[in-house]
Image (cartoon, rainbow, N blue to C red; front, side, top):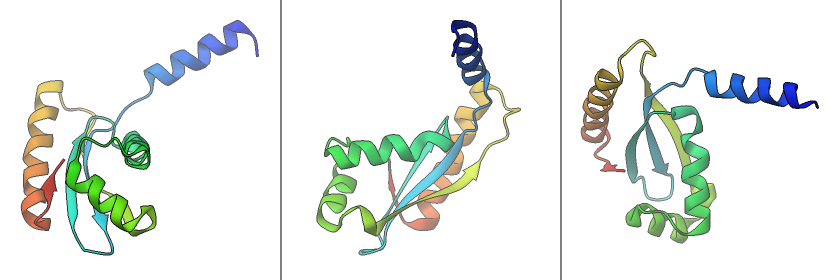
Amino acid sequence: MTSADRKALINDYKDRETIAGVFAVICSATGRAWVGQSPHIDTQQNGLWFSLKMGGSPFRSLQAEWTAHGADNFRFEQLDRLSPDLSDMARKDELKRRAALWIARLEAEAL
């Protein structure tokens, strides 16, 4: 791969469209749920699972359940995806509103 090819790939990666959204992490063993929001919903699970596997998640109740029941008892679900046409301020407000809605629906903890 040439230097120009590499730069082109990096620019394509940086220019890709990101989708914001609301997600849930659900423990099959206990039925507990956690709801969070992310400006990059498609990559959120990887970062969350990594921190949980390393034991360094900032979400203590989620980390405790993960440690007690193991990775096989957890699933990640995308609950809502926002339109990419929203402005940054509107996106933040809409993420907060939808996350609060899903927390109430699922009787979940906020992430």
